[in-house]
Length: 277
Image (cartoon, rainbow, N blue to C red):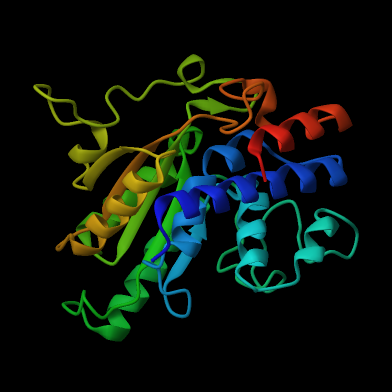
């Protein structure tokens, strides 16, 4: 298994790839792909996910540049193809499409949809391998965004996953607290998403999910959380990964404007320098 500092370098390379793709295309999303790069690097290169049989679902489809970058660097298609992001005839559209891009399991875009599909995939694998065969059943990892929690479909998916005891399903919440044009807290409130010490259970625990809260921009914590999720029996896991929108580039961090802003030539140069790749 690669060491955390090696995965950290991979994560920064993915961030640089994202910025280059969006800059070349003149369109695309930045804040979420950068905040989730440590999570994506851990999933694709951390050695805990069996890429031949496990499934990775990116429910927040607008994060796709970072997934495309990971797929290219994992050998699913040539790196040169990243330059075609969102171009006419490209296999890399602005939202993931199954059957178009090698390695993409689910077509996503409308927020919430991927979470429901992930539940269906996990149920299907349980039916195929046996309801009690948790240790040999392929796993499903579903990445969702915190803005996505505004969709009722997500909570219905959580409810069904718990009722069907899908312990081969891990949700990963990229909680960067930013969504299009604003902070999540200025758009919607959820109460306590997770429980705190000496306080009642949070909303996710109340739904019956096995919850672990981490710093999602610390590779070591991400790896430990993924290991934990594989050992949880009897129900789905939820890793709440607190991250920073635009992580890795100081002038982009925690600024809603970078949700989908395209960097200028000078901004791209400064960002790549800061990422040190």
